[in-house]
Image (tube, rainbow, N blue to C red; front, side, top):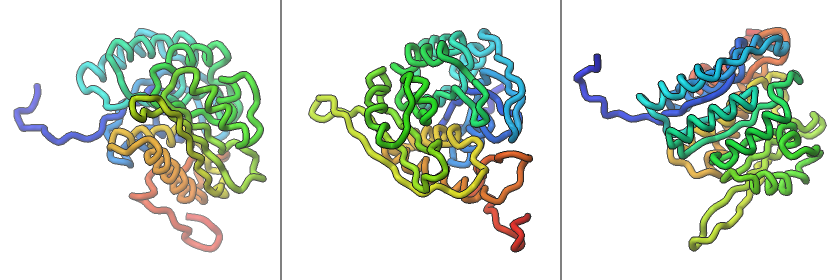
Amino acid sequence: MKSSLPTSLQIPKVLTIAGSDSGGGAGIQADLKTIAALGGYGMSVITAITAQNTLGVTRIQDIDLDVIEAQIDAVLVDIGADIVKIGMLASPEIVRVVATTLRRHGIQKMVLDPVLRATSGASLGGDDTAQAIITELFPMASLVTPNMDEAALLLGRNLKSPDDFQLAAQELLDMGPQAVLIKGGHLDATHTQITDFLMWRTLEDDLEVIQSKAFTHYRVNTANTHGTGCTLASAISTYLVQGHDLSHAVAKGIAFVEAGLEAGRFLSIGEGPGPLWHMHDFYPTALSDEKGKY
């Protein structure tokens, strides 16, 4: 039964559609932490359950298609969403049901992080899934955020350096999204600087113009990088519905991830590469002694 009290306060509503990470560092868990940390109201549709920790992914169980559709319907019919962030979609069938359901609800803003491979190397989708993402979701996307490996899979060729990003972004943009952000964090560790490249469509005097911007920043020296892609896409999504323009939202999202990486440098979570620290603004981390322990 609804309360009779007035409920006039509105906060940004962000729906994440992605896989569940049992280790808590990426996927739905990272998305919800990020959205909450940045002042949004996070909702979730789980597309797959992963048995996962800092050492890797050991099992993936897709959620039934009708259950995925029912989750989307349940959220959007009642609560609605100012923006949808999409992560792991592990099969072409899941891609199609997500796209069809979102179109039925008339979703206008969507950030697509095409999660096709885990950092550990585990496959989270293949060529058929990549093609379905291009066909079904690219034309709906406000922004697509592939890393170098995902961009290579989507394009069918390798990207070797940031010099390849502009052409790759243009080719991905030609596939239908409004904007593309290619992330350079998967460059090998000899690159002390990381370049992320944004290209987007805009209108000037009713004519479409393509703009681009490179974001260059220093690599944070840490092995705790699990969940960076999910976190970045969720941060950008939240900043966009707070009213920031695309370029500013991307810059702020990158800064949020950098701060999380810096704060999580010395965290000891699991035996493998741990996550960044999403709650750095609320619970700052600091070394308790010279040995780097807490």
